[in-house]
Image 1 (spheres, rainbow, N blue to C red):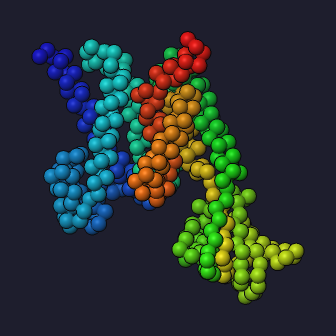
Image 2: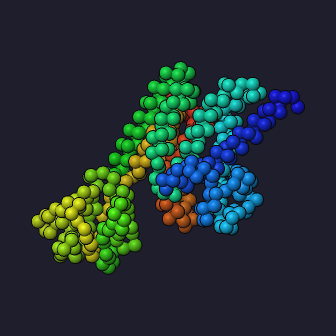
Amino acid sequence: MTRFEILNTLLHILAFYIGAGIGSFLNVVIYRLPLDISVNKPRRSFCPSCKYQIPMWQNIPLLSWLLLRGKCANCGGGISVRYFFVELLTGVMFYLVFLKITAGYVNPWPEIGTWGPQVLCLWVFMSLLISGTFIDIDHFILPHTITIGGAVVGVLSAWWVPELVGEIDHVNGLILSLVSAALGLGGLWIVVELGKLAFGRKKFVFSKEETWEVTQPDENEPPVVVFGEHRYDWADLFMRASDRMVVSCNALQVNERSFGNVTVELWMEKLKVRDGTSLEEFPLEGVTKLTARTTQVVIPREAMGFGDVLFLMMIGAFTGWQSVLFTVLAASVLGTLFAMIHRITGRAEWGAKIPFGPYLAMGAALWVFYGPQFFEWYVNKTMGL
């Protein structure tokens, strides 16, 4: 083998194992970021069970999990297989990106200065998609660090490597990235608002009376709403001032006052009690006790969260306006397909627990590998070329 052949072989191995190593770091991000734990302190990964800081020789990507059989070397507690899966997935995605970008080079090594920046940017993009996906699955949130911070990185990447958004000139890449980010933000925001109008209520009807109450177990945390077997954090119900919960009460208590058959409208900052034609309003700041007996509750709900909107903004910043359209379409198709599979297999509740963010991530990843070819085929088909 020639020197370049050896170096090219090492490049293939290195591309995969760099990804596995970054996947190990992404596991830290996925675990710590939603819990507001610094990803730098402590510097080393630690066991979720005993908090033992794992030394370097026990934290080799992929190999350590296999050799330790998914257990902590200190306490023997189980380490989820997902840690291994995230490392493997990141390694595979990094390697596929490397293959995709270097496909036109017979000897990639001598041309590393040409394809290297694009590969590096797409590796960052894949890391954001993977970390956002698993955080969304675990916590139903997409942190601003990933969405807004990722969008900023995407704009800078498109300026540095305009090929990411289909441009050659750096300034044009910057402008198109900003426009694409705005399209992702504005376009999906409209979808969210329309979805709110079409599907913005969910009704619970109980065969017998259930207790409904608003409590604040921790004075430093927002209130929670509990009724029947359901429990909602305040932010899950009230994302804006126009959101309201409607409760048909057979009996209601507000502080020291009691009411009979009334309808309660709970808003973000106020409470309205309707008794026939009369209406009484209470500011929530002065309400210390709020409980009722009810047979019907109607809650506000989103077609999707605003985090998804920001996630698509980040996707547009990295990959251009065509990818925004493709990602929304692909994510919708994938979401429908997975829902059908879950329903057919009798696991419909599983599909209901998967937020929309992972489908957006899958759609964006598909764009990186197949999207431009699909877009070109669709345009030619539509125009009869």
